Length: 287
Image (cartoon, rainbow, N blue to C red; front, side):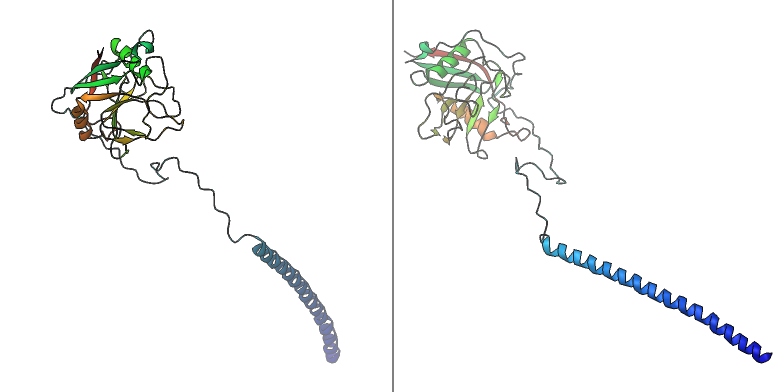
């Protein structure tokens, strides 16, 4: 019995041991198959990655850099300094400027160009810093001179601040006046005319009185003018035209000099730091 039991036990033990062995073998084969599949997938993935690395550019193209509209425009995140401010100062020999015209004058009618042709005029520009006397060249610029005479008779320039001063930083040396609002962007008298008597060498000599206008439009002369206090080269505008020279300062240019010497107001970087305003103008024909 003992041997049978032992034999039976041995037989049972052998049969039982075979089943786990088969399961283990099958498990090994399954794992090998899985490893093989995984290996193939890894190889395929590696191949794809390698192919991409070989065919893609070395670096992505940089984004297009936008053209800067102004060198003064700060970059994102840059720290900007506050605009400096300064109190306008009334120079010795000057008086405080009056307020600009609340309602800009609108003269009726138009200048008589024929009446100015072939004639010269003496003009007096009465300012808060004294009188500036000018000779007007109706012989060379009758349209501009007839306009100045017409506006003077209509008291157009009374209480109009000179709104713009330029200097070394701009490379031009002028004091600009004539806008009844004192801003440079007033409505004007309601008429315009073309360019006359432009210097052939583009040099505007000290003391010259010339018309201001819009760049690109030679027929935009109107009310605004400038006085040159230092020889200035003004290349012709994009429209191929320069600026009408219609007069020459004969006395009082020292007034412009001292306004220029006081500098430009840093608050707006345009107006004179020492304000000056036109109180009125008169014109008389020369004999």
